[in-house]
Length: 325
Image (cartoon, rainbow, N blue to C red; front, side, top):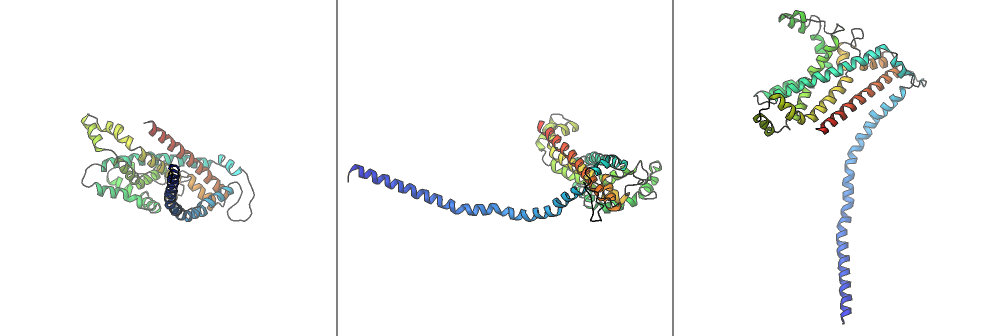
């Protein structure tokens, strides 16, 4: 056997070993890939039923309802005609609808500002090392778990002219503050705002508390040592850490205020007169009381548009502000 033969045999053996290693290394991968693909498909089997139910129960009715906004359907008969944009044009000539938009915006803005300020102050208070802080947290959050309808019935009883609130004001010598809370057109919207804030300020408190957990104690202590007062500590140390919680709370409260219905309907029904009429109550009345379903759907589309626009501005504005910091 000469030198060249040995080289050829060595080359052949190395090629065979390389091929064997390739087959051995590729074989486990080929065996694992189907199982990996199956594992990747597993989440979709859980998502598909929920997605199908959502499309069937939410997306399709919403699209169908959106189509009715361009008709003259009354909600009862099988006959309807295409009406184009007439229902939307009608909105701009409807004084009740314009008033409803203004009341809706007033309630949404009032609820958003007052609820979040109170929720933040409460969160800062119960975040301190007081002994009863856990009891206070539960007590302050409790109204948020009550159904809005039950809350509205309770406060409707308390706010009658001879109800508990006026009796307490009289007993405290504050008779000048007694009001016909739900019967005075100048007061009723603020009474509704007060009820909503009472119920959901505790909810905002919980979200702010979650944000406060992320504030490092070392940074707060360092700011105290540097001589920063409570206001400066909050503004420069606590506030940046609360940016996500502020964003969530503002979005939830503004959207909740814009679509508020239960409390208004139970407490006032949009009255007295139309002084507490909102887009939600107008949608209900037109669609289900006046049998003007197409116009009610058009109002719902307009309200959805307002909610989307305000939420978008709020979300991107706050995110941009947080990013710049």
